[in-house]
Length: 206
Image (tube, rainbow, N blue to C red; front, top):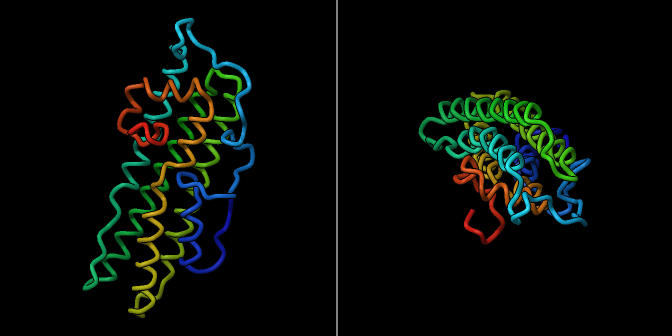
């Protein structure tokens, strides 16, 4: 998903659909969220997910936590100092993009979960995070190119940056990727590292 062509405004629309957000009708090649489990999820015999599956979920959530932390506190616009606000968003996008890249690498190191669609799930999560990194980097680059001598242009760019930040932290697509597999969904519920992330099934309070 490489939709960035043009102004920062284009980045806003793309960021709403990027890795952590998910849009209706938007697909990622190889997306595990589109597959349908046809066999019972492997368990330890008691109906609970296997311990190594819970451990994998914990590794993934540990990798994702810095991404959510980076995206969760966007700069507060200062209408009296648009240049400073612009610089704050540049730092915000850079830090969040770096966190997404690190998370993708860590999930790669964690390997595939021990489920039937494990490799597809791992690849999908990495693709989502790499797209997030690319989109945030593109938004940062376009914001950096705004003419700071034009207050109206800076104001528009800052407004668009705020919209990009607001759209980037939605966990819908990551949640769907994990919850599509019953065992992974159960593992996410059990892994302590996942407790504070918005990855539970809709309506579960997670």
